[in-house]
Image 1: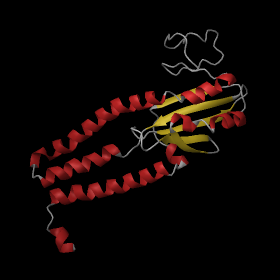
Image 2 (image 1 turned 30 degrees about the vertical axis):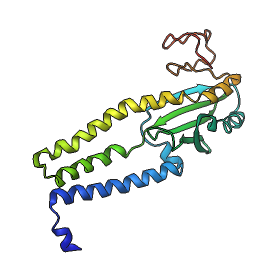
Image 3 (image 1 turned 135 degrees about the vertical axis):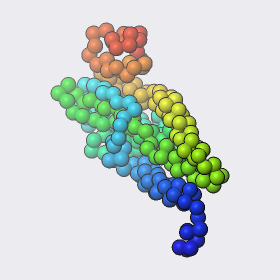
Image 4 (image 1 turned 180 degrees about the horizontal axis):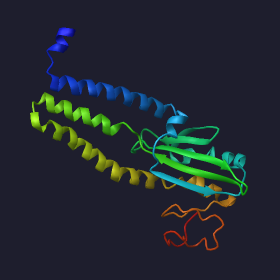
Length: 212
C-alpha cells in the first residue's frame, strides 16, 4: 500500500487527500442536516433573520404550528427553543437550514425566523477541480481549474439561495394561521407589522396591503 501511494504524483495525491478530508466534513454535515441536530441548525450566519410578534402565549403558538409544517412541504422537529426543519429531500432546494425560535414576551410570543445555508458544497468543489487538473496534467492551469468551480458555486448560491428562501414564502400557512394572534408580516420585505397603525402599508418598503 505504501509503495502504491508513493507512485502517485504529488499533484494528484495532495488534492486527493484534500478531497477525502472535505468528503468527511461533508458527510458529517449531511448527517447533522438529516438528523435535525438542533445545534447545527442554529449555527452559522443567517441568510435571512426576521422577528414576528404575536399576542398569544408560546404554548398556544406551538399548538398552532405543529400540524402546519407539512402544509409547507417541510420536515423537522420541535425543540425547547421552537422548531428546526428543512425542505423535503425530493424537492429542488439548496439544502437550507431553517429555525423558527419562539420567545415569550410581555405582549405574547415572538417568533424568530432564521434561514442558514448548507456549508460544504463550495469546499467540496475546490479539491475536485484541483484533482481534475492533476489527473489531466494541466500544470499551471491547476489553480484556475480549482478556482473556476468555486466561482460557479458562488454564483449559483448567490442566485439560488434567495430564490429558495422566497419560494418558501416565509411559511405562508404558519403566518395565515397565526394572523388571529396578531401576526402580520410584509410579503415583500418581511417587516413585522404587529400593532402598526397602518397595517395596509409597510413603512419599510412601502408595499400596499401585505397579506397575513
